[in-house]
Amino acid sequence: MSGRRMVGLAVFLAAVSGCSSAGAPVRATPPLVAPSATVQSPAEGGRVCVTGRTSSEGKSHGLVTVGGHPTAVVAVWLPSLEQSPCRTALTRGDASTARRLAKDVRKAPKPPSGTFNCPNDNGRGARLYFAHDGTADLVELRLAGCRGVSAPGRGTRTLTDRLARDLAPIAPSPWHDGLAH
Image (cartoon, rainbow, N blue to C red):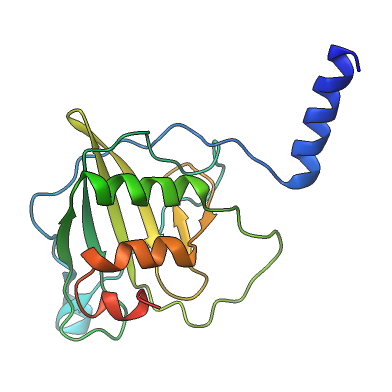
């Protein structure tokens, strides 16, 4: 086959298989302590619980990804709507855990196309910060409803059972309960 035909075949196969290239990792600074999960609400007469929302809405530039050899991972665990007390938590994982989770993120597939109803989406999630030479790659996880992996300006991947299992050892209660299957 000629070179032009091979390139054409490769482009065709990528299009029909739904492949999409990964975008560049999204850089972010990990927090040193768990952020507050509540905000002041004069309308409610006190403080209200705020759950995490993924930020991959709108046009994406490739799929969410993580750089090759992270040295550690910081996880900020975001509460569900019904969690009491309403709190976040912060945990850390070593280089081995970070590399395993990064590989899981990179191997996670795109979700199928179409419209989905996610009735059990209670807001429970996590933000992972993969450390690389003084910077970090941000990955956001939806842990309920239509579980997914995202980052600002990147296309979503499906949160796989493997990623959930590999995340469970660094997950505090009650987040651990929904991961370890």
